[in-house]
Image 1 (cartoon, rainbow, N blue to C red):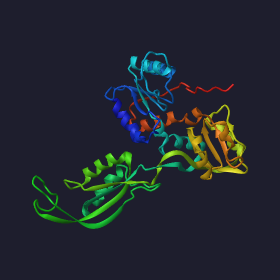
Image 2: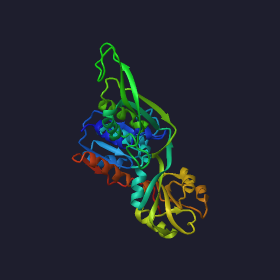
Image 3: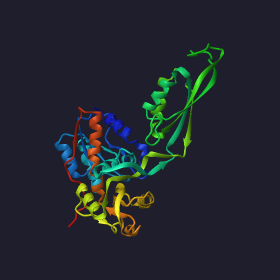
Image 4: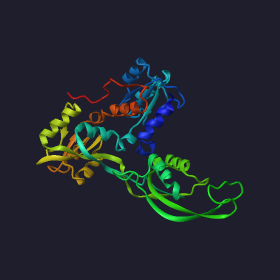
Length: 364
């Protein structure tokens, strides 16, 4: 395989357009057209991880956290980042990062964390706004089914837990083919009226190109008429954090024991244990303290994340238990998620999950 084929698969799972403005996801080191014989999947890029890649003959490392976050003005090996870049280049290892874009999809980091914790009825905690488009096209009535099917299969028409959503209006279109045309219906040089359907559907902006390609390929007309409108609707399938429910209610201390066991945490930092039992739980893998208010307003009795600051633990005292289970601990299953996704798409390609524990935080 070549690098760009794997990039394409990863970006179909989590489009680069979904990454946060401060992030640096995508291919960071390497050439899109280079051959790849084996890939190593890791949470972080460290010297030990690169040594593992060299030892295992992996010439692609897929990491959740980007090895390059800030601008690089020189490569002297004086910083850890410079040293890692130099090792990768010397050993012809490409490095790809899939970070906040994987955080911001409903099949990403938080989905697998929720699965491990046993949460059901999942929803994005803080949906994104402004990344939806309305697509409108017009086609002969007899070909509407084919066109609709094509755009749905390309990713259009999903609203919450429903797919294949569209609105259809019957009407009559007119056109006249000029010199050089070969009209599907009607005669060149004559105005023609055709019974058509106006098909309206919704499309995430990062899928608009592939949906348009699918629509045009399926459409019978030489020139396909369509409109694209920006929408301010919330996209319930993308955004930060996730909220769900436990199968059975749990007492606060029992829930803490459950979280600690599932995540393998050496210690949990948490606010006062909530009065009563816990059923509704909000989560955010990595650093998610910015979602504390969202979690409470959504009715969560517990919120699990990492990197919680001292003063954040005072919030919603006794009403919602805030649990800092660790940045690494809440994202550790991301390696498994990436491996599972790629293995399904390219089952014969050699994929390894790194055995290196990259957690930089130690507990004494």
